[in-house]
Image (cartoon, rainbow, N blue to C red):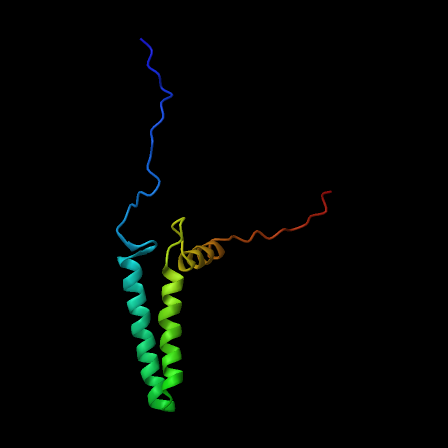
Length: 106
């Protein structure tokens, strides 16, 4: 008795493998954003103590926290800007250089 091996399985389209609060924003992204905001807050407080200008300090904080959030948020394919930069750095470091030595054999 021969079984039919060509059967199709219907897979739902919006199945998530991890818990996300919003699309692309999960617990790790919130933690990374909080760390970036904390570093931005420390830098902003330092700038405010030195320059006594709250607008510059506020901009530093906004750039650090917003930049961190924008770089770690996942797109619809599961990638982020930070992950792409990490992959590029790993790729550049893994390149090998083969020096070509020309001989007079030809």
